[in-house]
Length: 402
Image (cartoon, rainbow, N blue to C red):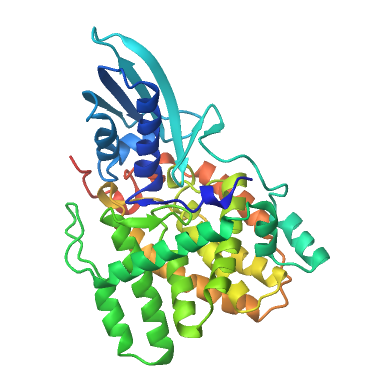
């Protein structure tokens, strides 16, 4: 597995696979062909189906158009076997002749792949990639998951996670201050500030739940408006982990050191799923985005409350298991409905998964690794209309943006 830096990417929304990935691909191709007199970019599958709502065209044009004219071609019903998020870049000379061609895939979380090989990613640094192996290591050595992360990563990983945590907190605090309507044709009103104010008026359990909702909404609304966020593991699911950690730090006074360790564990969980299955909604549905985010947050919460390695694994397993089969069906191709609300619900579910696992000794029948396998197969079995194409599910009766 690769560094958790590849999972926690700091950038702008609204989509890691449809905005961050294509922008990075355009930057790579431009760097290779600064002499080009024109560019032609063809978007396939999910990238074409929901690209306008996800601002894929804006990301590519903003990168290439200052240097040369760009022609965008949309082919929503052509899906490559390797991944649904395919794109082909072509450079042209002054005579309109193609000088180079590059097909690349945006595979989720802002990562790119070509012919099955990651582009611009760090090398594999984790020698174990299954939860069962890492859990056994924890039990044998008496160490915890974050210590395995520390053992595998560079020594400056804690500085990087500190920057991740700072960005996450800032996205919450900005989102809580914002009001008005999110960009796009849905005219969806921001809710984070209202939830935050209302939650303050309740006591104990209702206040706690309302605050968690408001924090998740704040980050997700910032993402939907193109604000600066952290993929955790994606832009579309970026509100879950920050909401849970921010709430627990505020309500339980956990130190930054313990929060960063929880972030490391959450990153390890997301990394395992990314390596063995997928974190791409276009490939496996929303179970791979919000479901994985819930799993990450569940593990982080369990660790903060002193869960054993087995209890942490159980919390992570529940967080993902109870999102199995969740479709990715963004209305009008926007990362708004149902994405924003799903982040808030998943944050609350993560806290429940922690409580449930805390009542157990950590022993259970279905392992985290098994759920990851089932999630991968479920994603494979889902029809394409339920995998970020906006052709089915909740998006079916809404027309795509023109």
